[in-house]
Image (tube, rainbow, N blue to C red):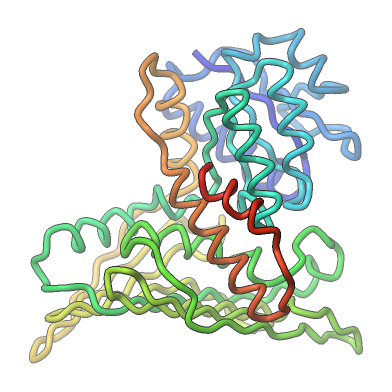
Length: 338
């Protein structure tokens, strides 16, 4: 049975991880040790149902690190340093809020820590555990619809208030796009960036460079073409994925918020009326339950970390296309060996 420590009690830690943990604990009590979830954030006193600790060191004294899963929910530019602190205290099972890293230099630092301390890292991209993603993956593996030719993902939502109030994400590539990248890499394999673009956010006369939207075109090594679009100035919410096969087009809609955990999938076949199914899809709760199940086993199956390493590589390449800079090739080489 596993204990829990949440490091970082902002929007992700307190608003997403904590309530989903409560549901996962209720659904699978045998995975979780009794007692409250521990939480640490020097800028936040705590939250209901949480045992606030003053430091990771105090948490390590209260619960054994080897039997504790850490949720690292710090801002994306603060990953390697807290990860090293946790590793030195003996924590090995760590769920990292997406994205895993903002660039290849940070990814290389995380790779060194993972190898040195034998860390078992999972990245918080719940679409990978989504019931909709599982159905799409099953369709791809079965080959029943012919070859997969193209993927289109649209992730639109208004994000003005949070972008103005929180400087944690430097570009629109770092907000919604990592969810989609994890799915498309899992579906179609590694890729190269064909084109990328960023849009500014303008609100009340203020301009936030690169935070209005992102566009990413990929050519997968399997021949599949992918386009990902994320508009963070949209008046409407949409999380849509379209898979174009030789014989069928699948259109899926992921849940858009915590208010409704329902996904939809439509199947369009030429010459027939489309069919649609609607089903429960609490992806984040399912993701956490899968992580704790894996961490509870003496001989763990391999996680999907290589997918997230590829996602960071693609994001870094896209950012370089939008704002060219020179990365240290030694750091890049170290990063891809995470």
